[in-house]
Length: 234
Image (cartoon, rainbow, N blue to C red; front, side, top):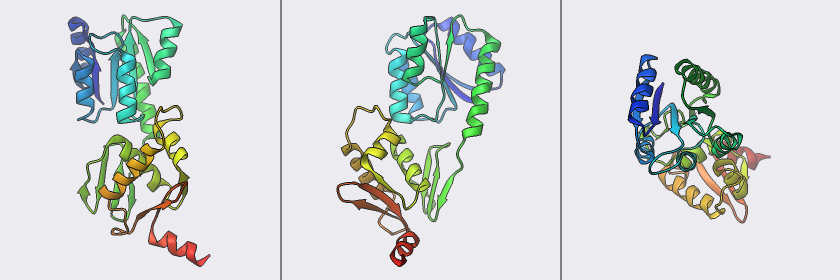
Protein backbone atom coordinates (compact mmCIF):
# COMPACT_ATOMS: atom_id res chain seq x y z
CA UNK A 1 0.00 0.00 0.00
CA UNK A 2 1.05 3.61 -0.53
CA UNK A 3 0.76 5.12 2.95
CA UNK A 4 1.23 8.69 4.16
CA UNK A 5 1.49 9.56 7.83
CA UNK A 6 2.04 12.65 9.94
CA UNK A 7 3.97 12.46 13.23
CA UNK A 8 5.76 15.51 14.62
CA UNK A 9 8.04 13.60 17.02
CA UNK A 10 11.15 12.84 14.96
CA UNK A 11 12.03 9.60 16.79
CA UNK A 12 8.49 8.21 16.46
CA UNK A 13 8.43 9.39 12.86
CA UNK A 14 11.56 7.36 12.10
CA UNK A 15 10.23 4.28 13.91
CA UNK A 16 6.90 4.37 12.12
CA UNK A 17 8.62 4.79 8.77
CA UNK A 18 10.81 1.76 9.54
CA UNK A 19 7.85 -0.41 10.57
CA UNK A 20 5.84 0.40 7.46
CA UNK A 21 8.76 0.09 5.05
CA UNK A 22 9.77 -3.27 6.53
CA UNK A 23 6.23 -4.50 5.77
CA UNK A 24 6.77 -3.56 2.10
CA UNK A 25 4.60 -0.46 2.15
CA UNK A 26 5.53 2.64 0.17
CA UNK A 27 5.75 5.45 2.71
CA UNK A 28 5.62 9.25 2.71
CA UNK A 29 6.31 10.74 6.16
CA UNK A 30 5.40 14.25 7.34
CA UNK A 31 5.84 16.26 10.52
CA UNK A 32 3.06 18.82 9.95
CA UNK A 33 -0.57 18.61 9.01
CA UNK A 34 -0.06 21.11 6.22
CA UNK A 35 2.63 18.91 4.66
CA UNK A 36 0.33 15.89 4.68
CA UNK A 37 -2.64 17.79 3.24
CA UNK A 38 -0.58 19.33 0.45
CA UNK A 39 0.77 15.90 -0.53
CA UNK A 40 -2.65 14.22 -0.30
CA UNK A 41 -4.02 16.83 -2.67
CA UNK A 42 -1.40 15.86 -5.27
CA UNK A 43 -0.91 12.10 -4.83
CA UNK A 44 -3.17 9.08 -4.49
CA UNK A 45 -2.68 7.29 -1.17
CA UNK A 46 -4.18 3.98 -0.04
CA UNK A 47 -4.12 4.94 3.65
CA UNK A 48 -3.43 7.92 5.91
CA UNK A 49 -2.18 7.68 9.50
CA UNK A 50 -2.70 10.88 11.47
CA UNK A 51 -1.39 12.01 14.84
CA UNK A 52 -4.05 14.09 16.60
CA UNK A 53 -1.78 16.58 18.35
CA UNK A 54 0.35 18.51 15.86
CA UNK A 55 1.99 21.94 15.88
CA UNK A 56 -0.19 23.44 13.15
CA UNK A 57 -3.47 21.51 12.84
CA UNK A 58 -5.18 18.95 15.05
CA UNK A 59 -6.28 15.57 13.73
CA UNK A 60 -9.93 16.58 13.53
CA UNK A 61 -9.17 19.55 11.28
CA UNK A 62 -7.04 17.39 8.99
CA UNK A 63 -9.68 14.67 8.71
CA UNK A 64 -12.42 17.20 8.00
CA UNK A 65 -10.31 18.71 5.21
CA UNK A 66 -9.62 15.27 3.72
CA UNK A 67 -13.26 14.22 3.78
CA UNK A 68 -14.41 17.50 2.27
CA UNK A 69 -11.74 17.67 -0.44
CA UNK A 70 -10.74 14.07 -1.12
CA UNK A 71 -13.90 12.19 -0.24
CA UNK A 72 -14.56 9.12 1.88
CA UNK A 73 -12.78 6.43 -0.10
CA UNK A 74 -9.35 6.89 1.47
CA UNK A 75 -9.10 5.17 4.89
CA UNK A 76 -7.73 7.04 7.89
CA UNK A 77 -6.18 5.74 11.11
CA UNK A 78 -5.78 8.11 14.05
CA UNK A 79 -2.71 7.44 16.22
CA UNK A 80 -2.59 9.51 19.41
CA UNK A 81 -2.00 9.59 23.16
CA UNK A 82 -5.60 10.72 23.69
CA UNK A 83 -7.25 7.64 25.13
CA UNK A 84 -10.59 8.57 26.69
CA UNK A 85 -13.84 7.21 25.29
CA UNK A 86 -14.86 10.75 24.33
CA UNK A 87 -11.63 11.20 22.36
CA UNK A 88 -12.09 7.94 20.50
CA UNK A 89 -15.73 8.67 19.67
CA UNK A 90 -14.81 12.18 18.49
CA UNK A 91 -12.12 10.80 16.17
CA UNK A 92 -14.42 8.21 14.64
CA UNK A 93 -17.30 10.65 14.24
CA UNK A 94 -15.20 13.21 12.39
CA UNK A 95 -14.31 10.57 9.79
CA UNK A 96 -11.54 8.23 11.01
CA UNK A 97 -11.85 4.54 10.15
CA UNK A 98 -9.75 3.31 13.07
CA UNK A 99 -8.20 4.69 16.26
CA UNK A 100 -4.96 3.57 17.92
CA UNK A 101 -3.66 4.79 21.26
CA UNK A 102 0.06 5.43 21.72
CA UNK A 103 2.50 3.95 22.39
CA UNK A 104 1.90 2.10 19.15
CA UNK A 105 2.62 -1.60 18.89
CA UNK A 106 4.26 -2.64 15.63
CA UNK A 107 2.37 -5.83 14.89
CA UNK A 108 -0.99 -4.48 16.02
CA UNK A 109 -0.55 -1.51 13.68
CA UNK A 110 0.39 -3.75 10.75
CA UNK A 111 -2.56 -6.05 11.50
CA UNK A 112 -4.96 -3.07 11.50
CA UNK A 113 -3.51 -1.96 8.17
CA UNK A 114 -4.02 -5.45 6.71
CA UNK A 115 -7.65 -5.40 7.87
CA UNK A 116 -8.25 -2.03 6.20
CA UNK A 117 -6.56 -3.30 3.01
CA UNK A 118 -8.94 -6.28 2.90
CA UNK A 119 -12.00 -4.08 3.38
CA UNK A 120 -10.74 -1.67 0.74
CA UNK A 121 -10.27 -4.48 -1.75
CA UNK A 122 -13.79 -5.79 -1.13
CA UNK A 123 -15.49 -2.43 -1.62
CA UNK A 124 -13.28 -1.26 -4.49
CA UNK A 125 -15.49 -0.08 -7.32
CA UNK A 126 -15.06 -1.11 -10.90
CA UNK A 127 -14.14 1.48 -13.49
CA UNK A 128 -17.23 2.94 -15.14
CA UNK A 129 -17.14 3.12 -18.92
CA UNK A 130 -19.95 4.74 -20.85
CA UNK A 131 -19.17 5.43 -24.47
CA UNK A 132 -16.40 8.05 -24.58
CA UNK A 133 -16.39 8.37 -20.78
CA UNK A 134 -14.20 6.47 -18.32
CA UNK A 135 -14.38 7.11 -14.58
CA UNK A 136 -11.86 5.48 -12.24
CA UNK A 137 -12.44 6.52 -8.62
CA UNK A 138 -9.63 4.33 -7.31
CA UNK A 139 -7.05 6.23 -9.34
CA UNK A 140 -9.01 9.51 -9.15
CA UNK A 141 -9.04 9.76 -12.90
CA UNK A 142 -11.64 10.71 -15.49
CA UNK A 143 -11.21 10.47 -19.25
CA UNK A 144 -13.34 11.79 -22.07
CA UNK A 145 -12.62 10.42 -25.52
CA UNK A 146 -9.29 9.12 -24.25
CA UNK A 147 -8.20 12.47 -22.80
CA UNK A 148 -7.68 12.97 -19.05
CA UNK A 149 -9.90 15.72 -17.66
CA UNK A 150 -8.83 17.61 -14.55
CA UNK A 151 -11.62 17.48 -11.97
CA UNK A 152 -11.86 18.01 -8.23
CA UNK A 153 -12.67 15.12 -5.90
CA UNK A 154 -16.26 16.27 -5.49
CA UNK A 155 -16.68 16.61 -9.24
CA UNK A 156 -15.32 13.07 -9.63
CA UNK A 157 -17.68 11.75 -6.94
CA UNK A 158 -20.62 13.50 -8.58
CA UNK A 159 -19.74 12.22 -12.06
CA UNK A 160 -19.31 8.69 -10.73
CA UNK A 161 -22.70 8.78 -9.01
CA UNK A 162 -24.54 10.15 -12.03
CA UNK A 163 -22.93 7.71 -14.47
CA UNK A 164 -23.74 4.90 -12.03
CA UNK A 165 -27.41 5.90 -12.25
CA UNK A 166 -28.05 6.92 -15.86
CA UNK A 167 -31.49 8.22 -16.64
CA UNK A 168 -32.48 8.70 -12.99
CA UNK A 169 -33.81 12.05 -11.89
CA UNK A 170 -32.21 13.35 -8.69
CA UNK A 171 -33.22 16.36 -6.66
CA UNK A 172 -30.63 18.91 -5.62
CA UNK A 173 -31.11 17.92 -1.98
CA UNK A 174 -30.56 14.26 -2.78
CA UNK A 175 -27.29 15.00 -4.58
CA UNK A 176 -26.19 17.32 -1.78
CA UNK A 177 -26.77 14.62 0.84
CA UNK A 178 -25.23 11.85 -1.26
CA UNK A 179 -22.04 13.63 -2.34
CA UNK A 180 -21.41 16.14 0.45
CA UNK A 181 -23.05 14.33 3.37
CA UNK A 182 -26.34 14.80 5.13
CA UNK A 183 -24.85 17.26 7.64
CA UNK A 184 -22.94 19.35 5.13
CA UNK A 185 -23.15 23.04 6.04
CA UNK A 186 -23.71 24.17 2.45
CA UNK A 187 -26.76 24.88 0.31
CA UNK A 188 -28.06 23.46 -2.95
CA UNK A 189 -26.39 26.17 -5.01
CA UNK A 190 -23.21 24.16 -4.53
CA UNK A 191 -24.84 21.35 -6.52
CA UNK A 192 -25.72 23.74 -9.34
CA UNK A 193 -22.14 25.04 -9.46
CA UNK A 194 -20.63 21.55 -9.65
CA UNK A 195 -23.16 20.38 -12.23
CA UNK A 196 -22.35 23.40 -14.38
CA UNK A 197 -18.63 22.65 -14.17
CA UNK A 198 -19.16 19.00 -15.05
CA UNK A 199 -21.34 19.87 -18.02
CA UNK A 200 -18.59 22.14 -19.35
CA UNK A 201 -15.56 19.99 -18.53
CA UNK A 202 -17.09 16.71 -19.73
CA UNK A 203 -18.98 18.24 -22.64
CA UNK A 204 -22.25 16.80 -21.38
CA UNK A 205 -24.18 18.52 -24.16
CA UNK A 206 -24.66 15.47 -26.36
CA UNK A 207 -21.32 15.84 -28.17
CA UNK A 208 -20.19 12.45 -26.87
CA UNK A 209 -23.62 10.88 -26.54
CA UNK A 210 -24.47 12.04 -23.02
CA UNK A 211 -26.12 15.18 -21.75
CA UNK A 212 -26.97 16.72 -18.41
CA UNK A 213 -30.67 17.45 -18.40
CA UNK A 214 -31.90 19.98 -15.83
CA UNK A 215 -35.42 19.75 -14.47
CA UNK A 216 -36.55 23.25 -13.55
CA UNK A 217 -37.05 23.78 -9.84
CA UNK A 218 -36.08 20.21 -8.96
CA UNK A 219 -32.74 18.75 -10.03
CA UNK A 220 -30.83 16.93 -12.74
CA UNK A 221 -30.72 13.77 -14.81
CA UNK A 222 -27.83 12.36 -16.84
CA UNK A 223 -29.17 10.85 -20.03
CA UNK A 224 -28.04 9.39 -23.31
CA UNK A 225 -29.90 9.45 -26.63
CA UNK A 226 -30.88 5.81 -26.07
CA UNK A 227 -32.57 6.69 -22.76
CA UNK A 228 -34.31 9.74 -24.26
CA UNK A 229 -35.55 7.74 -27.27
CA UNK A 230 -36.85 4.87 -25.15
CA UNK A 231 -38.81 7.29 -22.95
CA UNK A 232 -40.24 9.03 -26.01
CA UNK A 233 -41.64 5.73 -27.25
CA UNK A 234 -43.39 4.90 -23.96
